[in-house]
Amino acid sequence: MTTIIEQLQRWKAEGGSDLWQAAWERTIELGQVPWAGMQMIMDTPVLAEGAAALTTICYITAAEEGIHPREVTRAQVEAFREAAAAGGAKVEGQQAHWERRLIALGHDLHDPIDPVAKMWREISISYQPPADAPDAVWEDTFTRWGPGFISGLNKVFAPAYLVPLN
Image 1 (spheres, helix red, strand yellow):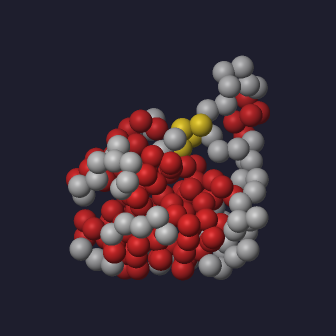
Image 2 (cartoon, rainbow, N blue to C red):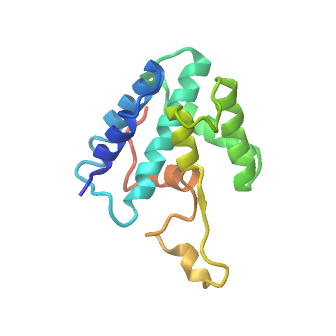
């Protein structure tokens, strides 16, 4: 079985700019303790997608601020998330916020070889339960409902999985 850290290393190995690689390194470093040995089973793929979302925030913030991803603070991550949420409570509004910032950094979100765009497409897929599913399905913690950049980040910052971001 693959661990979360191994999955993050696989995504990192897909390449990209030095800044994108440094953002992956930072996330992998942050996840070493809380996610040590966690296998990619049950709800942990959601956590891995949340880690990818954290990588993306660190990358965007570092690029916009002209800093190294290791200098991105928890306050900056929370400010990013709040700004996205201000774009609208609906997923579409939050997604548009992230996409505007990635496009401003020169990414074509449909580019099949851009590793940043490829990761964005993966974490922005919004999974929904079937229309006839009972309400209890929404509460199933073993299934990712919504996009990974929202539900995954919520998992990353949940007390049980919290990364030690300053």
